Length: 281
Image (tube, rainbow, N blue to C red; front, side, top):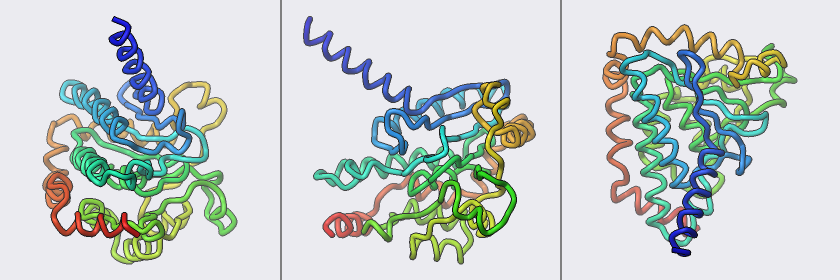
């Protein structure tokens, strides 16, 4: 009995932590998935957290069929959207765990790529690796900047977007490489993947990584409780009708089927060789 209670308590504690790190809310026709920055301030992903995210997507998808809606991803605070994978898990002692983590992330990204509701990522802060790829898998991307007016000084403020693999000795992996090719233009992809450049909001807009820059929430908007800037909420509401005919996912699949299939295929032999080489450095 004592052992059962202990295990149940541990399970409840893990579940509570997952619920705390990623939160699903609904505001009329708009669902928000918030990376809260707590307990891990950089919102890094491990296997249980990816499973939790997938379950939240289940909840949204159940609603889409009967009640058209839009899904918005956002991070809480000004520092991080997500720094990507938990590197302790990704590059730890057991290569099979790292492989499982990556392949699970690809399945989530494949699902997002053809999600039956319109999807928006609102980058509130830094998005590295998987954090950026979640945005790329969505239909639309915007970024919060301390100032939405474009000038050189603003490039030093706010979050940055980057593909950090070149700087941490890891390959992209075919799933991530294909998604990047699908959603980034060739010049931007070359620079992002081969140099690890960190893009400011204005640089990301000019490079075509994001669609718009938005201002932070006002104090009044924060009190309203939606958790997302007014411009993003209005954008989300305007996209809701695109889910009303039930063909949005089919059209996305027509556009992105090659990338979707590669993400679901997972690792191939050469990927495993590259990943092993990366971890051994």
